[in-house]
Image (cartoon, rainbow, N blue to C red; front, side, top):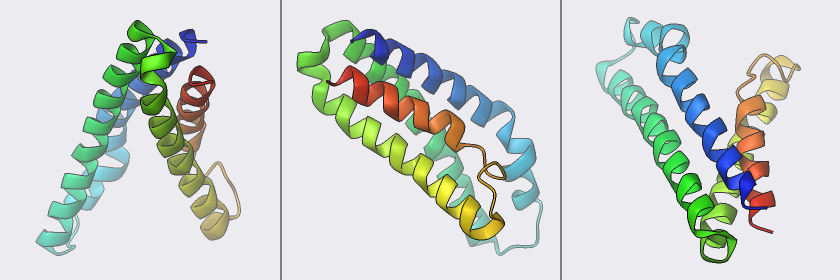
Length: 123
């Protein structure tokens, strides 16, 4: 089952790359160019980069978990797995609530597999 940690790490790293390279143009840059108050834009910038850090550190944690095996890594796998599933749930829930379509905010399609792989590896 520990191979699922490796899979979670690879998907997490790829998702972080998509977030950092492609997401900025669609989401971050328009907000930064808007007339929203500077303090709000600063918070959005910090949150954006915090998410990038989360992807990077999570990928490292998943690779470490793969290396050391499930017995030592179980708490990390469960914690991060639940985080990513909850993040995915937020995207699905808000997408349904605001747009009645889960694919308007498709980020959950990358976040949910990371969470599932981590939880499977933790079994």
